Image 1 (cartoon, rainbow, N blue to C red):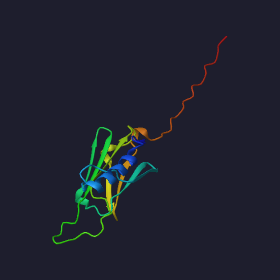
Image 2: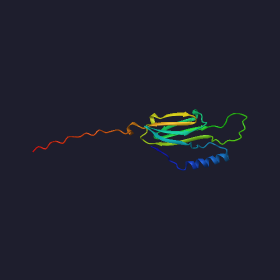
Image 3: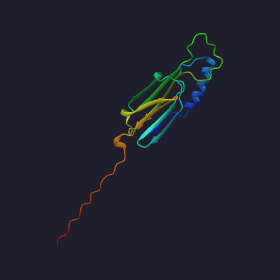
Image 4: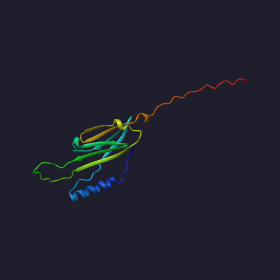
Length: 143
């Protein structure tokens, strides 16, 4: 129901992180770690976004593509001399391709302790259901 599309994304993220450290830039979107699992009649997707203001998180669904974007900005205080800066800054994004069996109209989102959790219900038409079997009685053969 959830498909991961780019197996080399982590390599791209690492290369981008190394290039950003050398160039001092953070404008290109980076991936965010996630877990996804099915729990009963819904899919749960959790993204690690520590230090991100909930106001800086955008969640969009277009057709069957779910896009999550978040931004962590540098310290904006004046007269600050950064001694160590290891936490990634900038825009983080992730796209998930959702199957037709998920109800994209009823997605819920919660943000707690730096974790964004999305709950995507399974669509009614995709839920298993029992079909009643009718038995027609054979007609007697008249001789």
